[in-house]
Amino acid sequence: MSESDNTAKKTKGSNYIAEWFGHRIYPEVVQTAESLADQKAQRCPFLTQATETDYQCVKVTRNAGKSRGVCTISSASGGPRKDWLACPFRALDATILRNAASRLFSFDVDAELTLTPATLLEREGEVQKLRERVKSGKPAIVYFQNAFGGEIKLTATDKSPAFSFDSTMVEILPGPDGELAMGKYGIFEIQTADFHGTYGVAVKNISENLRMYPHEFKEQIDTHHYLLNEGVESPNTANIFKRTFYQMMFKFQVGAHATSAGCIFAVPRSVWDSWQKHLGAPDLVPGDDGTWRLSKPDADLTSSPRSWIYVFDIETSNQQTPNRLDLWRVIRTDAATLSYFALEVAPEAALAAGGSVDRLRDTITRRLGEYLPEFGSPGRPRSRTRRRRNETE
Image (cartoon, rainbow, N blue to C red):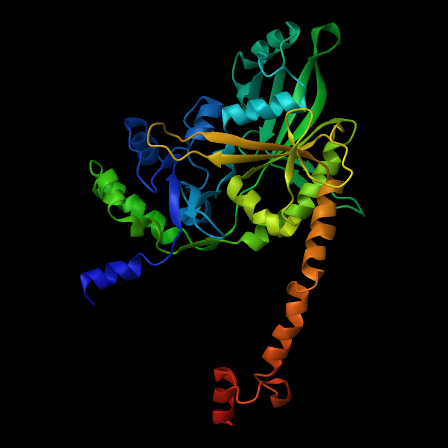
């Protein structure tokens, strides 16, 4: 096999590791002193920024390190090329987190708000700083996440399942005698994607190139994109909605409880686009509060459910690294509205005359015809599998 044939074989496919240890490497490598330092140290810049200390990527030791450093995958699956989230910590974007906290707890967007990871309170002086902020009347939120004190869990009962929340924000208020008191809690969920295949070979390719060509890393990767592609397959779009829908409906109901400030699901635009066929492709209309609503007949656009879907784009820029997350739409909704679109509108489209259910019978008849002549078209050859089975009898 010639070198050109070998290269063509290697570049088969359209899925690439797009961000590695927080920095863009596809479609073009963004290389700075900061990005190289993070990649060589296997450091997560998002956890590092949140905790104000060097924080290694949590995937370095997990799964034998085969997914270490992988933040996003670039894929053209189902439409135009977009980034798909492979790690929830990629969404630890200060702007979006502050926006979410302000919306959940009804703070002014310009308020001097602090978001403190729970584990930061282990440091000397941090608790006192928090007490002083609260005493002065400034809004203060402490939040828990997998890397920050662990996820908060909703325990199971005889009639309900257990759930963990990706991130739980808690408002800290002044209590009696100068003590601190707990206000409401808010739920912030981050939707990642499942992928077919494995990152292992591609991660090894990138790591070896950084080790062998530390001064030519950008040039090597930019001219050998197949290194980012080997073994990486498309997102499992059908599974994304299946594993998300029930959780989202359940957690939106938890967010509606009197003790809760609400619930936000944050999803990349790639995921939102993949949801459209499951929701009957609803139109979005502007609400009275600056958010968007799913266009439902007779919907009350002035209602105030405490559930939101944040849809964000991941910037593809060679000017700034890590790339920013841009909030595309804030969709205010509730479990009942989502249920209407997923369980009424989408099935009605499938059942409509000439729709997919009508075509289903034709598909079954055609498949039966591969085995039973009564169902086949005259002169239609039997399937290769069926012919091979007959030949062996």
